[in-house]
Length: 361
Ligand SMILES: [Mg+2]
Image (tube, rainbow, N blue to C red; front, side, top):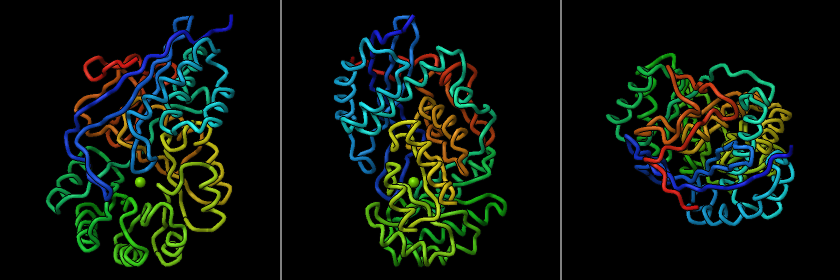
């Protein structure tokens, strides 16, 4: 029997963070996202999460909620396994990428639950743990040292430092973190905070500390500056905000403007697009990281499977590390610096906790 979509529930989800997340473009004290639950006639619930981030995607929570309400009318009565057709529709109407991600991952969740398999297995991969980096927000030297020590103690083997607000202080903070661990991998992310000249100076100053890469040193739309930094940096450069689709990645790769690319499900809009970008970057002989916004174990569970299927080189998937509590039952979790996935089919999420969710449809 062909299953059909019977109902689409939409929730606004808010979770306080245990520490302020501060990057070059702003700071936040809580997670604010939207979750959907697509119910089918046969009794399966598929879960999806949208994290609208105004500064990257130019999408806001109210706007994505409106989109999801409207799109659920299109979904009702459809076969949830017709994921391809639904994705083409999402692309055709130019759906907000974060909203498209929520719908697409909820459909993958339904497919996994229908088949009785975890998503990574559906994609032909295993569920073994993934080494991930732990994030250090922009802060004073004291705050930086405290975060680094906490992450090292928690077992993280890679530290991702946010930089981009003050060149001199950034260099001092990197030196400080390196002094706390000789072995840890250090990733740096400027979130568009530098000019090309500053970025080149920064890269040349921190290279001696053994840096894996520097992410998005300059403005997302400024490919010329990105290429200039890449050509004058002893440290590999990674594009993040500059890449929201396979087309964006192709433009940068053809211009030889970046060494690596950071793919996030929220930016890509679907598992399919995320895979396309990863494959494209690898075809050009470059490396690819899977990243995330401040996001819950639901979206990170989908990212876990995307990492496996796209054979990503780096993982920055600690999006819920500072959540006071997970707003969902099941999904991904972090142990000793590794990302693991709960048992269960699809995304392994069993429910959205009422405590943090307000149902709006
Ligand atoms: Mg980034």
